[in-house]
Structures are given as C-alpha cells and as structure tokens.
Amino acid sequence: MASSNDKHIKQYVISVKVENRFGVLARVAGLFSARGYNIDSLAVSATEQDDVSIMTIVVRGDDRVIEQVKKQLNKLIDIIKVSDHTELPTVEREFVLLKVNALPSKRAEIYQLGEIFKADIADISHKTITLGVKGEPENIDTFIELMRPYGIKELMRTGRVSLLKE
Image 1: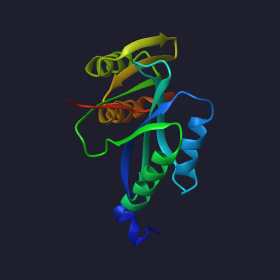
Image 2: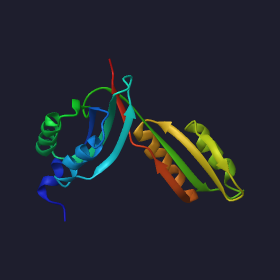
Image 3: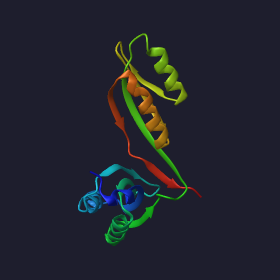
C-alpha cells in the first residue's frame, strides 16, 4: 500500500566531486543507505585532475531528506563540491550491453531496431546477438523495452553520467 508521502518521492541526480582517496565511496554511499535510500545508479570516474574523482548518484527520495543528505555530504572532509543536477539543464549519458535471443527469423528486426538506436553489434552467435547502445537515459529505457519481446538473456547498464550545460 502506498503511503501519502509517496507523492513527494522523485528521482534526484546528485554530482559529488571528491578527493580521490581510499574509503570516500563507502562514506558517500553510507550517507544514503543510513537514511534507507537505495541508490538507483552510481558512476564514479576520473576527472581532468589526477587527484579528483566525480560521482554521479541517482537516487529516489523526498526533498527534505535529500537536502539533509546533501548538507551532510558537504561536511565530509574529502568532498570538494556537491551539485544537484535534478532540475538543471544537463548533458546525460548511459551505456547498455544487452544480449538478446536472436532466432534467424527475427535477426533482421533486431538489426533494424539496433540501427535506429545506433547500436554497436558487440557479439553474435548462432542463438544470440549482443548490442551496445549509448545515449540519454530515456532512450536507453526505450531500447530495453523494445528488445524485451525478443527475450533478453543478459543486460548490463552503466550508471548515468551528468555534466551541467554552460
């Protein structure tokens, strides 16, 4: 049963620039888990500076608790900057590898869908095709849904990365 607070739950995209040190990821993730929030996706990457990493965290929650988490993140010693990308103009990308059943009678359809999404054929066998697609998160969602009827055998999706637009 949904609670009356569910209407206030939304998806947040938080960018956290950190000093590249042992244990920082665990401390950042711990702030979310301590409040009972499951992280939908987490991407950690190097930046233009060797000693700095950036985390893009996608999490669902309510405004009040996410604000508290952001304030507590800012207090951690290894945190350089916390940015909420949720309602700002951004460039976002994800990548998915998807292995789908590929009966000979369906291969042309699968190839055609792959072309629409600019998919790379990563692997092919007698029974399956593995496709790789990069793009905006919504396009990745659509690609996955269109591939479901063919029988997805395996799926691996990266976390979202996000940069603010100028």
